Amino acid sequence: MSKRKVTTLGQFIIERQDDFPYAKGELSRLLRDIGIASKIVNREVNKAGLVDILGEDGTVNIQGEHVKKLDVFANEQFISALTCGGECCAVGSEENEHVVDIRSDVSKNAKYVVAIDPLDGSSNIDVNVSIGTIFSIYRRTSLSGPGVLNDFMQRGTEQVAAGYIIYGSSTMLVYTTGRGVNGFTLDPSIGEFCLSHPDMKIPKQGKIYSINEGYYVHFPDGIKKYIKYCQEEDDKTNRPYSSRYIGSLVADFHRNLIKGGLFIYPSTAQAPKGKLRLLYECNPLAFIIEQAGGKASDGYRRILDIQPTDLHQRTPIVIGSHDMVSKVEEFLRKHSPVVAV
Ligand code: P6P
Image (cartoon, rainbow, N blue to C red; front, side, top):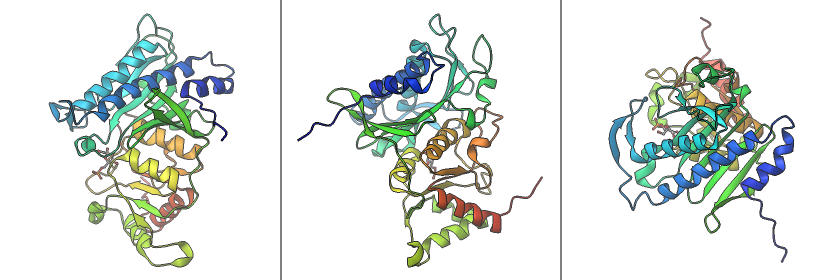
């Protein structure tokens, strides 16, 4: 039986380096640094139930959420790996209110900044549900000195690379640099991410919709009507769809990327901007989904076109199979038209 060639993340990055004729390996090394930190976080996530790293450490993060120790640990690991790697000058993290300057002698000429959600879905940590890391890489716009907030106030279309790690039944790293989406599965026996899902594409149409229907009464009319549309019987359009909601963004996103489907976190009366963060959750996943042939909007505008104004700003999001996102936009235009201000 022919043995399949094993391509590690490191080999793949080097092989694809030619995609960046002007880059001198910095981005490759930056992606390598993220891969290293994710293996360390994976080790702790996998044994979280065995050591006293679960539970809350008593602090509250910028989001007002009680911080669980693994959040803190993951944030420290990624910041440490990026600091030592020397290719990044600043980090914008869900766990830090302000931009973290990570310059050192090694990174004083670093040209990239990284926005990151070090451990998304943390409320699922102690119930053993898949959780994830989401990252977004930009070239800094400031010319020298410490990385500053303005380096992060770039539209999602300016991302140089984006990806996520899902710590689940297996651990995968999925990323794009604007030339398609590739998935790597961690082989614990060799401690390497190995190419397992080359050139990932999301089906244009799916049969899964993912939304927290517990908030139904607070949704815009267009979303309410779309949910009812998903539940109608119609053989021609393969309805009713299946409702799947893990409550862990990376897990719901990853399932839809592979099977086809739609994830919605809409605005509600209480949260007009929704819950999810533009810079380190929605933009990176929007970059990935578009590269995989899907679509991502806030229900009205392309996510990647939104001009950020704050490090932790939120946005409603409709993301997944292209035709499903377009259908939601159609319902919102018809039943919840945006009032021009
Ligand atoms: P809700 C997890 O806390 C998270 O940030 C995402 O991973 C997830 O998609 C969302 O919140 C779930 O939010 O309001 O449905 O519990």
